[in-house]
Length: 418
Ligand code: ATP
Ligand code: MG
Image 1: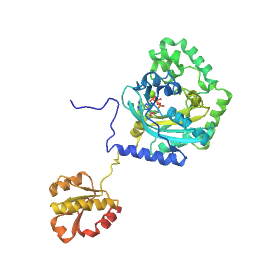
Image 2: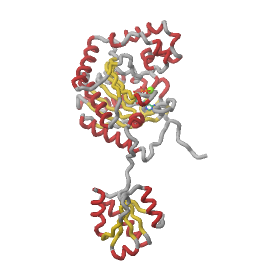
Image 3: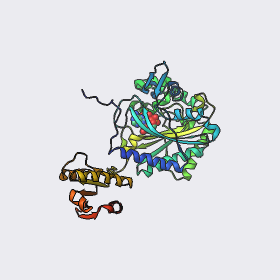
Image 4: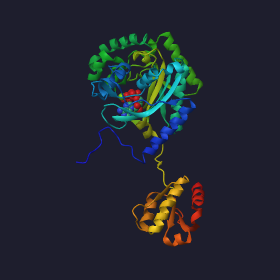
């Protein structure tokens, strides 16, 4: 039987990959304007890193991680997200001592054992950005404007930026209790998962897709009315700075995030077009994360964009595929060998040239040039070779001209510019 790929793990083929290259290069360009440097982290980490940061009672750690024992019995996990690894590496290399403010981005695959469906895979990709070392609202406003400018630069429209504040270790526990008490009396309305969450992680119930669970929460108290004065000021400041930047947003007091480490600002970018999996990006502040993994106190804020969902939102069906600038159709062994070297001379001069490898007829070489969508074909036979001439054919106008062999690079360069 022919071996197939694994469910939830997608191949990205030429024709599609150009979109990936586009969103990556645009991220590098825009994030560069904000002073972010690229960070690369390993695929594997100790399981403990995610258990302690993301939280034992989250869906990610509870049921979505690819965890295994390696040969010496250490429990390792394929990274389900980037923030914990970046903070781990940042502390491990003492970057906090070298520079009080770290601005980093990351691009790469993540692994979560979820039910594969549209917009949800087991290997998916994220573009991630993090600001470490800044507690003040400047960082929140700046990373949000960077995220939205990036999405705009890709031509993605109809996005909604939703923000909320989740409070801090002082004000969140009383709120959590309040929600628990509120839902105790409505327990029988909740789905099985949420009945369990009621004990372990009641705020996650806000995130449940089940309509009955949402109905049970209709009159639930809102986190914003539980914020301590510091958290309230911080959130007000974030909103003021976003207003200064004229960045539109909506406060969504029912938005919680699926990771335990978030404190204060949390946000999501939602696209109606995406259907059920509508969050293209999510993120927030995580001022206690560094300490949770055993380091000093380092505040931070970041976002992750789901690249598969991002690419679904790219406008237009225009193909980004590249095409060769010229195809060399040759006839007879001498001309073939000359053409083969000539193609190399063209490439050495920065011109993408293609040749036929199968010694096919002129007719089928022309068909191949057509399939490759090259604008120019160079025709070289024994006759032309004797005269030191080649024929160059414009595939759109079908006009052919004879030109001196020695002029070929200059002429192709000029024609490619037109
Ligand atoms: P969701 O609510 O869709 O499960 P999440 O809260 O688990 O998302 P995060 O952990 O915040 O997502 O990850 C950030 C982004 O990564 C999401 O907004 C989404 O675009 C993308 N993402 C998360 N899980 C997947 C997945 N299994 N497949 C594809 N993209 C994903
Ligand atoms: Mg999820």
